[in-house]
Image (cartoon, rainbow, N blue to C red; front, side, top):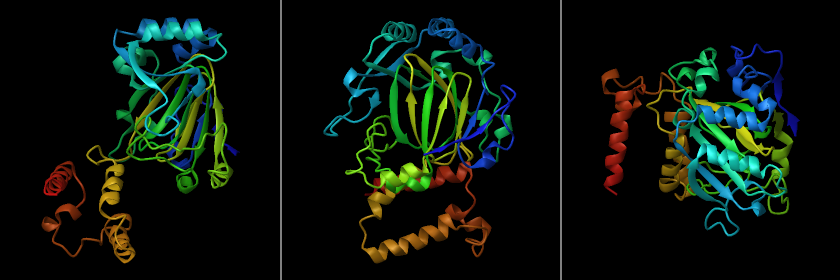
Amino acid sequence: MKPILEIHDLVPGRLPSNLLEAAQPVVLRGLVSHWPMVREARRSDRAAVDYLHDCWRGAPVAIMTGPPDIDGRIFYNDDFTGMNFGRADAPLPALMEELLKLAEVDRPPCYYVGSTTVETCLPGFLAANDLDLSPLATGEGTAQDALASVWLGNRSRIAPHYDLPDNIACVAAGHRRFTLFPPEQLANLYVGPIDFTPAGQPVSLVDLKHPDFERFPRFAQALEHAQVAELGPGDALYIPSMWWHQVEALDAFNVLINYWWRQSPAHMDPPLFALMQALLSMRDLPAPQRAAWRGIFDHYVFNADADTAAHIPAHARHALAPLTAEGAGHLRGHLIQRLKQR
């Protein structure tokens, strides 16, 4: 494993203007150290809970709950027929009080709140605890429209997964350990189903705490390319789109605020949709046909440029024209209609 690139001596709240040029994870030490939430968390868990209680406005939160024997690992059950955790809704203050009570328990149950929008459960929080993402604005996808989410709970382990949006994860309370793998390590991560997942994204089946190298021998190669960092309150981590990452919450009370944004227009669909359609329509074709379709995808998608459709009059290019919101709507409607005919 390798350490992640780190930037120190940041002005709190100010992102480096060239952050996206790194094209790899970057630890941003002290980026949100000026947040009132961070200051309270450094005092005590009790102070952090009281601060969040004042920000809460009554909306329940969705909680993943697991027994002590899962050791905080949010994952499948033993025979992959379901998950090893349950789900419940509860007021955030009640959950936080329970976490404080469990702080001294050696093997507590796992409580995990994931990907809950800040405005949904903590309206007003961002007024004093926010991040100016304007230095990251690029093209049609702008970081100014980033989605801010809260992740809260006790000790947990979230298996390696990727996210389509770019991500800045800010530790507001507790400590988190991130283990990241570049996208090209996909084959060495032994990823599970893409349509039956613990929390929406496909995950690696390898337990990083107890890796089984007999069952997953190529994972040793993935570890050679892994990057690891541990973050405390006030630190942040930039995670580029499509980088695989495991996230471990290390303390009895942890809070993380993350910002997701895309460097692409909002009218573009998630590429995972195309992958699912390709599995449905291409994976099991005879090898020569798959090779032909690989060439077609290279021509129209991966190697596409201004010359790809230049021989067609501009008004007649239809789906081959530069994609706009209107064009995306027509193309989506055409695809839906074709699928209905099956």
